[in-house]
Length: 112
Length: 113
Image (cartoon, rainbow over all chains, first blue to last red; front, side, top):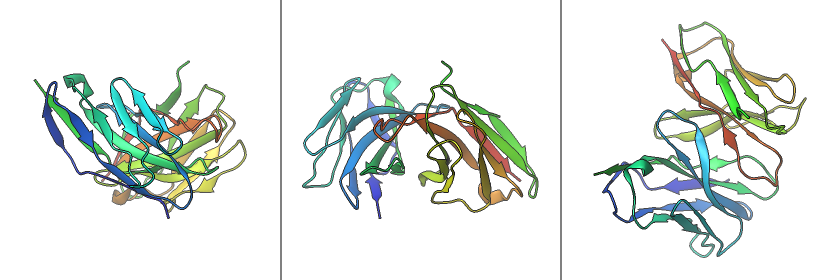
């Protein structure tokens, strides 16, 4: 089956620090990969996506590169802000399906 | 556009009570989903509806029923609530398979005592 593994949180950083949240996956087929973000008290919203190997998704200063050889899609940001504090979910969809498989989420806390 | 709306926001039930969670979207999306979110478990799919008039089970359908009332609305019913159903429930929708991006509602926090 399909699965997504994320690093456990919480991740606590100081403002302007570099962020990496690791994500690896297993999939039966050729997946599209996503990062969703959930701010406190809200639903999830799409942060970025990549649909084929070596694609880089980017949005709001966040980036992630689809690495087929390592089955990974790590999320990075060069300088985090307090407003980035949220839970981040890695997810995938395989082939023509439309059912997302989510990781367990990683909570990020950014402090001044 | 309101996007995806859910009611209620919060609910407390006693074991054995029933209730229906409501979800509506105004984006003319074809597919709709119900997830539950539990600590350390991420989001798990309960049921989905690929199009109006169809519904299918997800990973954790036991104890739930759904109705796709029309293209806009997709409700989730708990017939006899159990403490194991204490969770945050999210509804989501997507236009079609090529769209990829699911739009989520704000969630319903349900506690079963």
